[in-house]
Length: 421
Image (cartoon, rainbow, N blue to C red; front, side, top):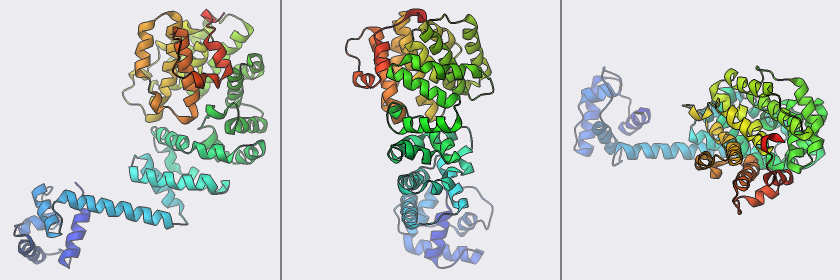
């Protein structure tokens, strides 16, 4: 139980520090005269560290608080929290310069789930991303605290998703996208970490992907986004150059799992477009990828590949490979992973609809949480949900409007292809 603020308040109210036995005795008298309640000077000595002892009882803390004019210690504590909160915001709103040490401290507190710090940081980043030149973003994005621990990604995703509308407003043309990606840290923090399927067909992410692809000459990330855009548009053959580029890079067990998910998605999509049979070895390699990846990252292996596979009619493969999928069994999973997991659940719903496993379809449907989906993925996830319902045979899917935003997915929804042929 924190009592530092209470000690300071007692000293201020009493008029002098409690440093001796005599000070404690005088405070005992002052408390009794003010409240009619007794706290022995030895109890006071222990409270101020002048004698050894355990934690003070709540009844004693209540007497101290009544001496200060509060009904109870809880009321005193709430008052302190209120003033701390108000003072923090007053200082934040008037603060014009931050040292890097102050930035690190605030970001670390936010990563550690301090809600006040999170609200303050969200306000600062909102103001910065909305109006400040890109150079002024960097001191905040470069804080080491963003990589404090494994769960940091969940908090980081919360910030990027919440502030995503500002990115969409800042980048609405090819020229703006080129200026945006000129800063590697922004690419790392706000581009690679913020895949925005809501504007991949037209808008922020489309412009950023084209600019980044042109600048880098192409990598698995930009090739992957280009191929997904073709899938969304229904221009399937145009995806082949991007898919072939990814496939040529091969599977690499040291690669971040979501990029390997993109690799396997590309293999399946390229074979489907060319109407070629999938080699059994590919299925074995994908299954082995789950054995190599840490279980708490299994949701990343399924996130990109499973929906593509299910949409293209490889539902049996999705179901078979998902048997090694451990994310559902993870004891501890951060916020963003729990929400990303719904993308895989939606893929399994499509697969179960195609394979006639209606019981498991409904089981997955009870687990998904559409109200919590990221704005950046929401349209895509809603379209997947609509595909699953159509494959199941429902005449009025819940998210028909979202599905129509993706012409290529709308076509696939009504033409299930069994076993990818």
